[in-house]
Image (cartoon, rainbow, N blue to C red; front, side):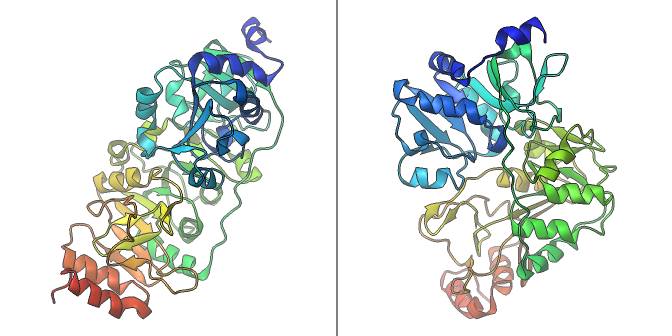
Length: 429
């Protein structure tokens, strides 16, 4: 072990506390990028802290401070998870709306002198740590902000712009625990139909971005007979790895990073983490590059595939509020929808089941619910897909949009939707 590694190595994760006191703003990567033992130590010191703010998207681990137990340690979420969703509802944390692509810029504005605490691999013989499953917004802070790392041998060593040298680290500790896994989504019959409708509109040689959930998983499954697909996505997971193993993904026709699967974070099963470990075909890059619509638009045929909660007949999509309550955040959906617009021959797909689970509520609406959040603008939404078909909206007048969306609604609701659309002045024929 080099002298620099010995000097910065800490025996106890509580060493992070004094660094947090000095910086007040702590930036934590999302998902498995969160260092469990280090954040537990910071949480335990919460009663003694004053004015410390933790900035993070999509936290996977519940902690007392998330419930507002420590006034001097406050969490700001930029994307709610199943852990932070109830905490926000109860007032234990704050929520800040943000596009994923803009996170580095936002953090520069609201936390100009932060401490970054992150999970990593152990250092290699040259003193380099890999941030493993993550690049996201923290990769842009490498060399600009001090890092306190938790080196875990279970973290895959990945390639790209997510490498931190010991000279950029103020402290690091060792920990050994398994990464949290995301099980492969269960795909139902409606999902399969939607996935096939999407896949048949994606040509060989296209570059794809795929979101999370059963519908995107179904779309991945329906692409198994395609050839020479490329990947440029914010989230990399098991389904994409399976397409790569099957020879479907080569990246041979990509414009940016040809031959590489580009991502900004990864989450999946243990087998998937083994897949990305030291895999030269995968590049982890900062989110302000990966999710930049102008970068995405360089691809000759880019296909963005994401799920949404509800769409109105103008084409406005709400993807972050369910039942009148905040459920998640904007994430990168609008980034990739816009990027697909910029791409020659690009296509953006927003998919949803036509109704709720018991088929009592249409998810195609004339007007979104009161107070509903618009995640992706009507001017950007391209293809909307349900199990009843595909509505192509780009460049279409309102009357055509309304007709096409009503046609892919559940048949039980079409007559009612048509009547409401006429009353609203959206249908005139």
